[in-house]
Amino acid sequence: MNQQVREAQYAVRGELAIRSEELKNELVVGAKLPFKRVVGCNIGNPQALDQKPITFFRQVASLCEYPDLLKDENAEATARLFPSDAIARAKLLLKNIGSVGAYSHSQGIPHIRANVAKFISERDGHPADASKIYLTQGASAGVQLTLQMIVENSKVGIMIPIPQYPLYTATLAVLNAKAVPYYLDESKGWGLTAEELQRSYDDAAKKGVDTRALVIINPGNPTGQCLTEDNMREIIGFCSRNKVILLADEVYQTNIYQPKERPFHSFKKVLKSMGHSYNGFELISYHSISKGMVGECGRRGGYFECEGLCESVMEQIYKISSISLCPNVQGQIMVDLMVNPPKKDDPSYAQYKKEYDDIYFSLIKRSQLLVDTFNSLEGCTCNPADGAMYLFPQIRLPKRAIEAAKAAGKEPDHFYCMAMLEATGVCMVAGSGFGQVEGTAHFRSTFLPQPELFDGFCTGIRKFHSDFMNKYKD
Image 1 (tube, rainbow, N blue to C red):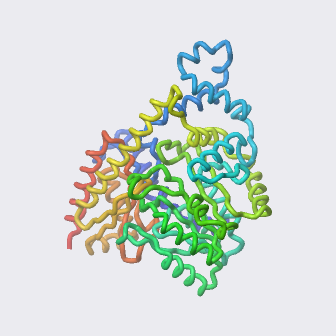
Image 2 (cartoon, rainbow, N blue to C red; image 1 turned 180 degrees about the vertical axis):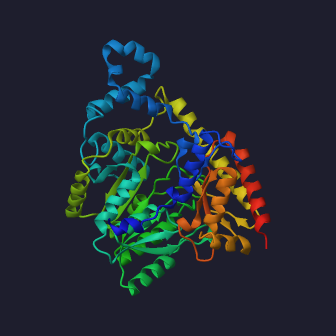
Image 3 (tube, rainbow, N blue to C red; image 1 turned 180 degrees about the horizontal axis):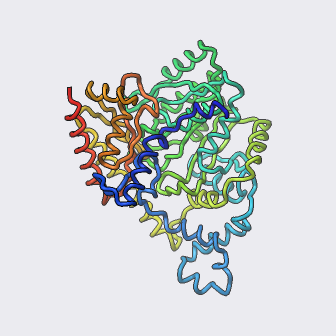
């Protein structure tokens, strides 16, 4: 088999996740375990942790799936079950789609791409071109496609943040490309400097690496930081000077928890504010229905927008997209709903706004509760999250725990996370799966467990940690 596949690692679905599934099965058959439920905090999967879907989105999706409900003879019954704006939206989508069971345009349904372009234009205050937008099977598929386009040979390097989301190292391993790490500064709220980017680029050049692109995850995964406009301008300047393509992973753009102090700005908006001297700057940005308050991970919907790419490259992107025929239509429908939700005067707006706000403000509260929990643990420090769905605390383990991990053939943070899983049913991911400064140990946790679970969830973590530290204290 392709040996590069063997090299790829994907920590969020690795050994810890596999063991959590085994424990779930043990509970199903009545095994006596120290917990009653496995809580999957290893991956940003909101609806797996009981986040409710947005009602309007599911209503429209249901009508598109079963268009017989829209026939005249069923109109009266349908009107009793569905609000008028959901019915109107489904009719409009089906007029532009035909059947959800048919292939769509390889780039995505034109009507939906036009709505995405309108959303981007309104968000940024600068026009977007639907012909430069590709709908995808979640943002991950867009990342994989564009990296495949960029990686010409095994000497090509892609700059990635450390800590990073393992999609990037896994994809680069399969493509036999070089991951060029740059480090976020934990002591400064996981900050990033242009000096660190240049250091990383120059070190790679000395090793003969041809660095072609820079990945920025903003808001950050797993670290939760949100970049300032000034910092973003520095990053764009770095890319421009070094002729590096900027890949902006912006899937958490609505998960912003300090909107006044650290609002989200897209790289497209900041780039356009920098004037004509940056015309031709190459930027690809990604968004997804899996995050935010939508949380429709299983429907696999997303998009990427290309800025500054030449026409011949765009033709090749279309060709590669065509090989997969099209992104799934159900995911495309959810993208349309994400970028074009009910408006203030619509019948569904009040319910949509309440559902959206309930999720949003609950995430802020849960984030702070978990930050406080981690910071109360012996030897543990945790930066608050400006955005995204995760915390990435550092843990300072006793020497005896590190020695026990070594004897077990595990990284210390992995050893800690496995012990937590076995004791509490809480599945987190070791920091070693994301990359970290050598000699440090971290773990990543979502704060997605629902409010009614949260007190017990935090209490269980505190008890486990105290028992673990007492067991291995020096």
